Length: 455
Image (cartoon, rainbow, N blue to C red; front, side):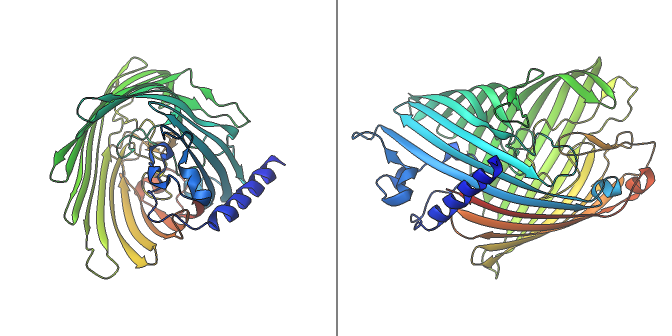
């Protein structure tokens, strides 16, 4: 009954808003809705005026209203290379929000309704949450000399750092990953500093049962600076604590510090995004010595037909060479984005070597197409293969083979309007020597279909 009410409200909202003429050159809608600036919509008549509604004559107080609706289907043939039965399921979510600002004070509230239908296995925290609070925080923003500012934020919110390789929104799956705690964000000129002390939200399957985790904590300092000439750099420290961590069948307390450097930018037709991550700490009496190197380099040809862009992603993440040597070498990606190696893939960024070339083209009328191929190897033969959340999905089992397999993927995207988008993806993952050595080894077929509406 509750799901039918959510769907009826969603359909009615889409019909109403889609029929409203779009505001000329609207701000770009992002996954972090609280970062959008709709001040240009002040005084706009009709439903678009809700994007910036003045609450007083002086204009010091205003409200922004928004809504996101998404339906996504995912289907799998031979999941886990034949280890699980074929499956398909439908993700549904609705995320309205209201943003109230009065001078230096702000309150942002975003409830959520998220459900999964047709899932044959056990529901996980990324599948369903019922009706719950996704975000709810308050800001105090103070001006700094030289057109800078400092913002103190407390409450529940989404956090996306850099390329989201370590701390992401988990926006691709049905239920994003929120955090409870305190953030301090300072910016001035070309420099921005983000410091935080937070705990992840533990998602429950019922209504209003999401809770702050009592076993995991994340602290960090993340600095970004524009270097000039189209180049920028991130320098950061992330302190992760988990009192109930699990690696290789052992359970214990994990204290892991990540030190990272990210270089990114664009100059002419060339763009780059390179990141180095070093991890140190301890787990259940072992010392941690892990690392990862992730790169993405792209070359665009805007003057050619279809405006093709060539992109090469190359990633290495360490694994554990010897479970008996007193050192844990498996890289921990912490809270990564949901779509790490493409729209759909069974592989996550641990004990991995990955080469991932792709080409995307603009077919016109806001339709784009991307074709990619990816090859995966184990970084060390002493460790197995992990999924994106970090679960071991295929143990090493003594195999000396490194090649995990190859994946091809095609993704078509259509931005129907500034508010409505559609996409479809088709992927095949063919097993390599390691998978053939250690268990089921059928080719996985994966399909994803998505429609999203953002007001």
